Length: 272
View 1: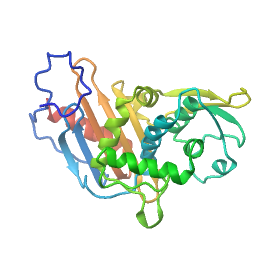
View 2 (view 1 turned 45 degrees about the horizontal axis):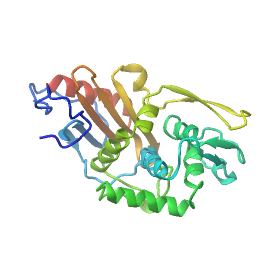
View 3 (view 1 turned 90 degrees about the vertical axis):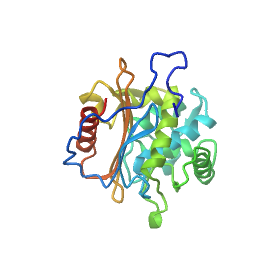
């Protein structure tokens, strides 16, 4: 029984996309407090640790920012950067106040470089920031992310832990995000160059997901890091020939990339 629809309906050769555990390998040297490893084709849980614990989202929240933005903007829409968005104490692209960028370029800045200034600019373009955050929480409900609450479009730690989600909910968010061709194509790119509309400012963006360089089957999706969330990574691995698709989420990690590589190696060695 397939619980997701990201496999082509015309593909009939895959009778059963569930993975079968064939050996008990030890899982060691994983530091994350929250873990979820899933078969993205069928939602089959392969490993979990505290996957229903409410934890800060860090910049993985920008996936929801992207989904809401796609409801509001067209790719060639032009957005002006507010001054307030250039003074945020977080990872920024270096957008200049009063400068205009296309929405598609801002989406690259949001998802590749995890630009807080890009998230702020997008959330203040066609709505107020308050209205945009409400749209984020409304979409969370639509996606049945019942243990999630957003207080900002950037992923900054909210007051008294008010900006939170769970690994289970982040999995739903990542699945919905990867259904969208724009998001899917952006998070798979290693580098990208954007320009302001008048070509005055040029920004070379580098994807924050180091695993794109280390594993050719890496498909995305989003990194994050704050004091409360620790290191965070939502990661998707896809084998084009076998159609195997693995989703790995780690939160409150001391080394998100090493943790994810250990979990991936364990999964590929344990399941067929």
